[in-house]
Structures are given as C-alpha cells and as structure tokens.
Amino acid sequence: RKLVDDVEDLENDKSPETILLASVSSEQSKERTEREHLVPWVKFLWESYRSALDILKYQQKLEALYHRTAHRTFEFCVEYKRNTEFRKLCDTLRRHRENPREQELSPESLEMHLATRFEQLKVSSTLRLWNEGFRTI
Image (cartoon, rainbow, N blue to C red; front, side):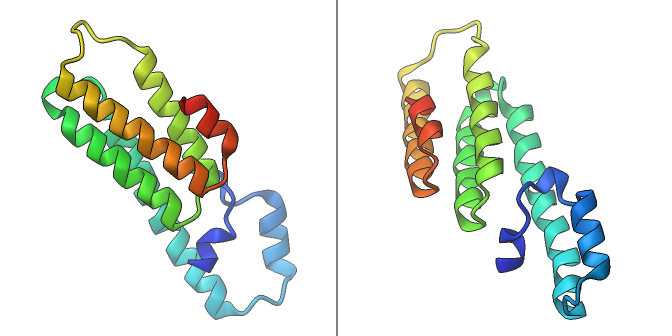
C-alpha cells in the first residue's frame, strides 16, 4: 500500500523526473519490482471503475449498479489514498448529473442519488478534500 501512495496520479505515473531518479537512485530492486507490478494493477482497477461508470451512466435499468460502482470507487480512493483520482471521480459524477435524462427521477432513483452524494461528501472529508466536499453540496 505504501508503494501505491508514492504515485501521485495513476494516469501519469512515469514522469521524466521519476525515470531519471529511478535510474540513478539506490532504491532496492525488490521495492522497485513490487512497485512496477503493483502500480499497473491499481491503475487497471481505477480505469475499470471509471469505464464502468461511463458505460452505466444512462442505463436506467442498471442505475442501482451505477451507484454501487460509485460507492466501490469511493472505497478504492479511501483505501489507497487516491486524492487525484477522487477529484477526477467527483468531476465525472458531476458531469453525469449535469446531463439530464429524458425522464423525471423516481423516488427510489432520487434516494440512490442522494445516498451517493452523501457518501461522496463523507469520503471527501475523510480524504480532507474540503473543496470537493463543498462542490458536492
């Protein structure tokens, strides 16, 4: 888990500075090998969550699955302390809410939306991302 914490942004994990630093540093090969194997898996998980949310966003019959996926993505961000990915997730969820559907929200649908937003607010306070919490409200 500590190895994943060192990577600031999963989409831009190899900057020129990190490549140069890795080539001249005396970092132990075991730790470097673990990072090279762990970071791609975490990146794959993040991309999978993001893709699932994009696919499910307008599927009315799969709305409960959309919200469960959003909650699992929140758990991912907290577990791996992914502040950058949480910000991107919040932007994605905001974009999904901005695009209106043809139908009015049912009471069950509204309840799921509110539960997801409250969870987003709770996670933003856990990660100490106060601006994201403010934008959620």
